[in-house]
Amino acid sequence: MQKWPVSFIKVLFVFFTVFLFAACSEDVEGDGSSTLPSTGPGGAPIDNVPIQTVEATGFWVNILTDSQFPVLVNSATGVNAIGNDCFISAVDSNGNPTTKTSMDCFVDVNEGDLYIYELQIQYNAPPNLCTHVFVTPAWHWNYSAGIGPTEVNVAVDSTGSAPFVTSCTARDSSGVLGACSAHPELTDVGNTAGPSCIYNNHGPDGGTSCCYGRYDLTVTTEVEPGDFQVAESEVSWGQTSGTACIGGAGRTSWETTSTNGFPQTLILAVPENDDGSNVGLNDAITLTSNGSSSRSYFSTYASFYETTATPHSHDGYVSATTSSLPYSVNPVDDLDGNLFVTTTLNTNTTLPQGEPYFTFSCRDEGFEVIHEIRVHVREWNTLADFMLYETSAGLDYDPDVGGLTGVEGTACIPDSIFTGRLCNDFWDFGDILDNIGGAYSWTPRGS
Image (tube, rainbow, N blue to C red):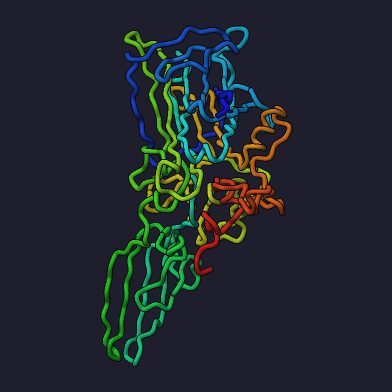
């Protein structure tokens, strides 16, 4: 098997979305780390820095892989250049601290390798630069989700041969009580046991519930003319955990979660020596491959998507809010106008937004950003196009090459032996956006 050159990355960029759930803080002991000497900007020995060994010249990230498979890395402006390290020098040419910097880094891997092999992303904070390092995983919503009303009242007439609902009212998060039929997230409003939530019954077997929150249910039944029975209960709309309705590395490769299962930003304290001097930090996160489990044919941590694709518009929702990010990342609100992220920390009434990148952020004592790196993991459908991208120095660029009809899911150009084979053997995050209704269904059930 041919050996491929492996390029590594050191990056930095400015984007950070911390979920409005309590962040997890982990102190790192500083007496076990060593530091490689500074070699100056552009001369840092990034490719050979062992994990847990601080490198002194800059804030960077580095892709660690098995040498059997190739990785191409690009941190240039635009997405078609190759060979630019993901690295921000700690000081400029005059020896002064580098100004705040934002950097995007694109990691290119063949889709079969992404499915089979795990990927490690190493990050390095040099001494005396970052007080804290924030690490956030990429993840997205797998299904449309939302929050149900906080109160439902059902009146039932059972005096005849068959019981029927005479009225159904529900109270939304703003406290307004109205007819159940006026709440777009409610279906089956004529059910004598109470209405259903439109965000439930997802998945191939309809067994995944993505309606969050609890509600007070009151069912008043007229059993005989003028004789009423009242039953009161507190009921869950069906989902309390974040893991059931989300996808991506934040679900499969991330242990730092909120109490209800959503990925959280990992906050690391950069260790100090006994004299109080900052010693820096070097560590890595490991992204688990789908091939190491029984998961479906999906490259979990391939987070890249084409920004030219039309994002989901939230026009028509109660709040009429729009998002520049894909709907599976940034839902903004649900059909009834409940915002996914608000200024409250009440996890019963808010849901987090997704994250389109792996974010590594260098912060000061006040958690203000010094530098930040966003890592986009991009899968390639065919080895031939991956090689062409490399040999052309990024001029020929088509990671999502389609088939005979130009559509990604159709058969590749056949040869004399194999026909009808697909170019796109494993789905990635971009495929979710291109094939709405597949892995992610943004159209609520029942609508």
